Image 1: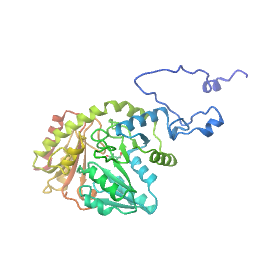
Image 2: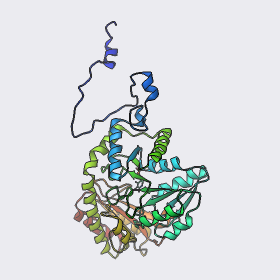
Image 3: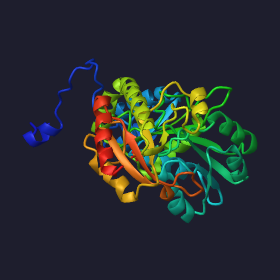
Image 4: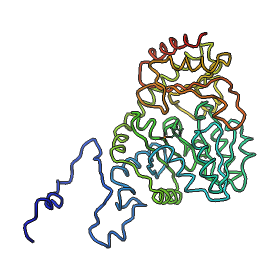
Length: 396
Ligand SMILES: *Cc1c(COP(=O)(O)O)cnc(C)c1O
């Protein structure tokens, strides 16, 4: 062959770096295209069992590595990455439900899961039912032969009631054995309790995890995962993911891989801060309810005790309804260290305000404004001082 033009040589360069570079950091493998040595390999390779690479969308050494580590964290055997926590929620529904089926959700669960059901699933002829996670009879009454998917969440998304997970799982196994049990494991994060092994032989089939929260820990990445233990279920989910086209960016995967080893330490620190902050909230007459599963007065405390060894750093208070909504908003606006924003589990403490009626479909005991605090990594005494100074704005 004639000597190559430099433009060509820069692309088809013969140098290959030696294999065997080993360091604490997982290399960032990038690529939409993956080269095949020949046409036979192009036809035969499969990514579904993770035995080979076919296209960047279906897995790289970096994404397979994060999936394996997350499967270990969750106590599952197979994990799939998707582009956000919400994408993990919707992948489960899209992969497992068909027209005529019913999906059941806890009324205190993650709001966008309910919204997805009301819009997309409803258009596809899939019915959504809500149940009260703190009332087993409510779930029993909602189960039908058409129930194919039951979501669990522990604790509830804003109001943090902790359900009897084992009891709810047992009931679904007995009365609706055709249903897949899925749990949104973002709060427990694989650390507070074992979703696949809840004790007494009970466990869920699928977990989703908003990696955006604890696994990322930085407030800078959006990603989600779906984990299961069953091979056939994994294949159903994996093929659905590939047909929908969910991808994750290699740099984001690397950011999560880098944060994952410190996650148990961050979780423990935010757990400690959350308990201290909740204890302070409980001394304040402006808050009529303090919701945190480790507080004996919080709904489902006994279930939390019997399922969990830790708690996430979230605390919700119900502002005394004698204060107006604008007074409650003035309190949140007056916070300086707690920044107003969605999400949690990063270094910066966050706060969000909810109208209690707007987040529930079924009856709710809450009437005042609900304020959710997400403890970051600041010194908790400073956060308590911030709360104390902001209460002046409540006009108490
Ligand atoms: C944040 C969150 C999600 C969604 O995660 P995103 O990455 O923001 O889409 C799902 N479930 C729970 C419980 C969450 O807190």
